[in-house]
Amino acid sequence: MPHASHRPVDPVDLTARLVRCPSVTPEEGGALELLEAELSQAGFFCQRIDRAGTPNLFARWGDKGAARSFGFNGHTDVVPVGDEGAWTCPPFTANIRDGRLWGRGATDMKSGVAAFVAAAIDHVQETPPDGAVILTITGDEEGDATDGTVALLDWMDTHGERMDVCLVGEPTCPETMGEMIKIGRRGSMSAWITLTGVQGHSAYPHRAVNPLPAMARLVDWLASHRLDDGTEHFDPSTLAVVNIDTCNPTTNVIPASCQATVNIRFNDAHSGASLSQWLTSQVQQVAREFGVENETRIKISGESFLTPPGPLSALVSKAVKAETGLTPTLSTSGGTSDARFIKDHCAVVEFGLVGKTMHQIDEHVELKQIHDLKAIYRRVLSDYFS
Image 1 (tube, rainbow, N blue to C red):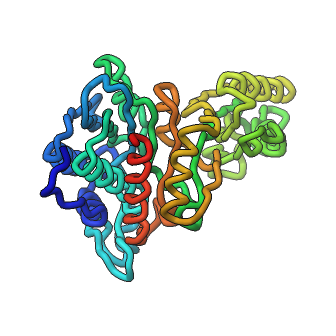
Image 2 (tube, rainbow, N blue to C red):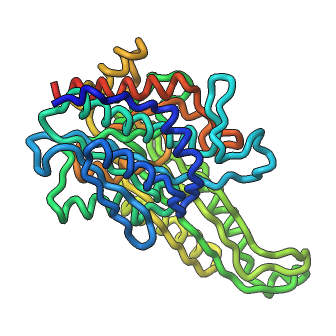
């Protein structure tokens, strides 16, 4: 039954209280403790799922194994503040001025978490649904992400907990609230390449094997190579050379080795394995041509994925249009998010506020956007369970 005495949760106040928690990865900072207390008081079953020092929170309202369940996912950890002296106000004070809330995590993504927690509490208190509402909140999205949402999903699988669909509250709108929903993400991988020759005196280059010309040839080829022309829902894949280093401060020594780092953001025309094989073959080919040794270390952070346009994206789009008047674009742009893990569990899309200031000095969010986001999430829940 509805709780007649329930007072709606103020998402701005909750955002401010979360921002005051200094939860720089991997520190919990009190953020998950705060949310657990709020959700428990509202009748949610809460369970901390900490793994390998990473803090995580699972919360469910409704019966385990309910006929249908709606999930939200987000994170309370934030990136470092950088030069604290460059901030116009301390980054963990949640200062409110000029219609905005300022602080680290204000945009990415404590406001998103506050909005869906507030929407979920209000919905189950005022219009108890015929089903379950599940919240999965991690403290390890900005870090390695190995024991965050992954740990939550592992625990859920072991304990028979399941989301039928999931909405991730990451910032998704480039400029205007309501303009974009993410229905997929590109894959991401990084490679550390080392080419090794023979060190020698620069006056006698014939006595050395210089790895630098080989590396110059390699990175030029990689940077200018077009991986693909894009696919139906994805832009073309990209490869960026992000570092070249010889650790050689002198002018009279040909260095023994040279290192380069590249990052690839790839669409669904590729897999991490296929790109790893391609990249390794390119390195080996150049190494043979120049007579140098080679070593390539690759880390795949996530595969590309797509939730095809369908009932879930339509549900969220309808709510966004009802609250903002905009019909959001369905996009796969941007970096990685924890949706890359959830897509193996259930259908997932992402929608959140404007992310222009995330990770910046003086990160901030418009107060109106926080209220709008809560209203959108509340409408999503109402429409889903109606």
